[in-house]
Length: 137
Image (cartoon, rainbow, N blue to C red; front, side, top):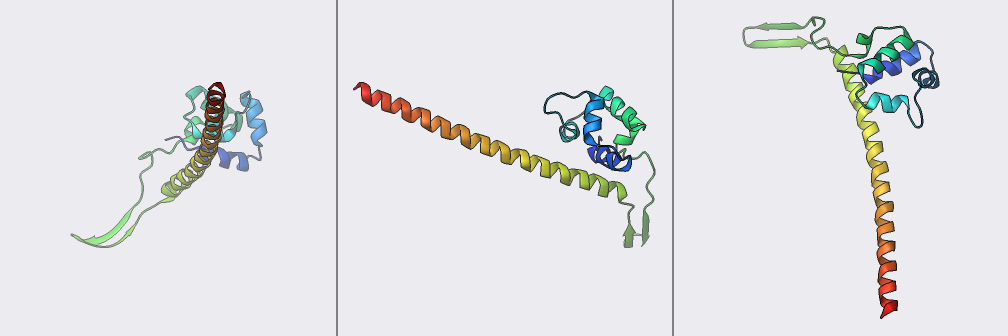
């Protein structure tokens, strides 16, 4: 699963600016690193981003099962006492999902405002239409 937070971490680690990445990728208009993270980038796009940072494409993915997790279950038969799970991958994915939720909430807020503006315009247009019908009578 593509993890966009890794891209943000690489920007910090490598002391690179988002503007430098945008220029390197030759993104036009309103393209941003956040918009790139929020969609599913193509393999060729990820390859260019990986080249920018000097890393492998695999760097941007969380691979379940690629490394065996070391879990420690202490128990006797069906009586399990303590369970310790290596959850660093889960924490990273959790952070990514929280960031994604925040971004989606912002998008929803913007769309709700846009919808209100459109509804207000529709009301104004219908009022103008009613006034012109009244004037004809």
